[in-house]
Amino acid sequence: MNWLTRIFAARNQGAPRRPVRIFFTNTLSGEKELFVSLKPGIASMYTCGPTVYGPAHIGNLRAYIFSDTISRILMAAGYSVRRVINITDVGHMVSDGDDGEDKMAVGAKREKTTPKEIAVRYTKQFMEDLSDLNIVIDDIRFPHATEYIKEQIALAKTLEEKGFAYGLPDGLYFDTEKFPGYGKLGGLSRASLEAGARVEVVKGKRHPGDFVLWRIAKPNDLQQWDSPWGRGNPGWHIECSAMVRALLGQEIDIHTGGEDHIAVHHNNEIAQSEAATGRQLAHYWMHNAFLNMGGEKASKSLGNAVYLSDVIEKGFNPLALRYFYLQAHYRTPLSFSWDALAGAANGLDRLWKIVREISEDSKRASAPSEARENFLAAMRDDLATPQALGILWEALRSEDYAPEEKWGLIEDADVHLGLSLLNPPSSAVHEEQNIPEEIQVLLMDRGKARSVKDFAEADRIRGKIERSGYHVDDGPDGPVLTRTTL
Image (cartoon, rainbow, N blue to C red; front, top):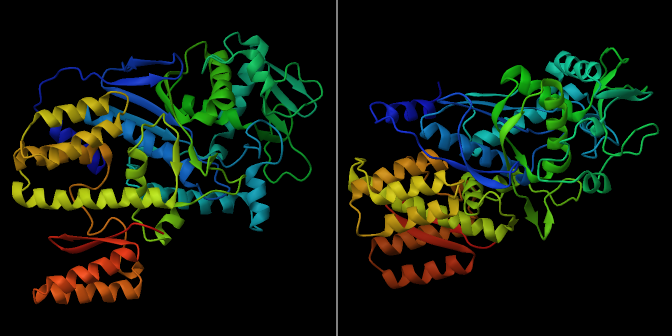
C-alpha cells in the first residue's frame, strides 16, 4: 500500500458510508455518465503507455497526469484502484497503422544498440518522468509487450478459430467486416475509418481497415518469436487486449489514452477483444486532448517535441508543467509555449506561498467548509480541474474562511491535484544553481538593502530584477524567484 493509499484509507475510516457520485465523459456514448464500477469499491483502469524507442515528450505526458487525476479522484472517494500502464517494446510501426518499420528497431539503429537496451533505457526515463510529475506509481503494474507474447499469440489464435481472422503471406489479419460494431468508439463510420485509414495497402487484404494480429518476420527483423503462423512478431494493437485480459480481466471499468488513439488503436482493441470474449472490453473510455506546439500537435515526427528534461534544464520545477495541464480541462486542446509555462510556474509559486502562510496560521489543523465541498464536487464532475483551481484560489484569498477551513481545503486539493501543497518546495521554478549569477547578486544586494531598511534601494533593485525577466515574492522562507519570460 503506497503513501497516498494510506492517506485515503485513514481519511475514509469512520466516515459515513454513502455513495460518492462521480461523473466521467464516456467517449463510447459521447455523454457525461455516472461512474458505476463493475465490482463495488473496486475500479479497474488500463492506460495506453509509451513506445519506449525514445523519451516521452510533454504531449505524451499529459495522458499520464490525466489518468493519475482520475485515479486520485477514485481513491479519495474510497475505491481500491487496480491500474495497468503498458510498455510497448515491440510491434508499434512508425505509422500508427500497420506500415513502416518497428519503432523499436528504429530506435535501436539510431543508437547503435539492441531493442532490449533501448527499452530498458527509455522505460527507466519514463518512470523518472512520472515520479518527477508526482504521478502515483507504487500500485501500478507496468507490463512490457515482450513479456506477454504467449498471451498475444493465444488471443490471435482464438480470433482465427472463431472466424474473425484470415491469413496472408505476410501475416494474420483481423477481418473488420466480421465485427459489426467496428468504429463504435467515437461514433465513426466504416467509410470514414477506411477513408482516413493510416494503414499500408497490402495485397490480399479484404478491407482497407483490416489490421495485423501477427506479422511474419522479415529477414532483418530484430525481434522474432515462433507462432502457429510462422516466426514473426505481434501487431501493435493486440498487446493491449492481451494484457488487459491477463492482468485485469475480460471486462474493465476504465480505459484511457490520448484522443489520437480513438480512430485506429482503440477501435481495433475493442474489435479484437470483444470478438474473442463476447463481452464489453471497457465500460468507460476516456481520452485527453492534444497538446499543441505552435498550432500543431506535439510530435516527434514533426520535430516540435519538448521533453521534461528540457523543462527542468530551463529551471522549471516539473510540477509547474502539471499545474499548466490542470489549468485546462483534459478534453480541451492546450497550446504550449515557454511563456505559458512560465505563467503557470509563477501561479504555482504564488499558490505555494499562500499555503505556507496558511500552514502557520492554522497550525495544520483542518475543518470542513463549503469551499471544500465545492472543490470536491468540481473534481468529481468529469475532472473539472480549472473550476476546482478557481475554487481553491478564491477560498484561500477570502476572509470568509478560517485558517483551519482553508487548511482542510488544501488537504483535499493536495490529494486530488498532486501539486505538493502540504509540503511545498521553496520555489516552483528555480533551484538556486539555475538562477543566473548576476540575478543572484542582485537578489543578495536587495536583501542587504532590506536589512538596513533602505526600501527605496530595494525597490530599485527589484525593478532591475523584474526587467531581467524575473518576479520576486517575499515568502516566510525568504525571497521566491519566478521566471516571467524566457
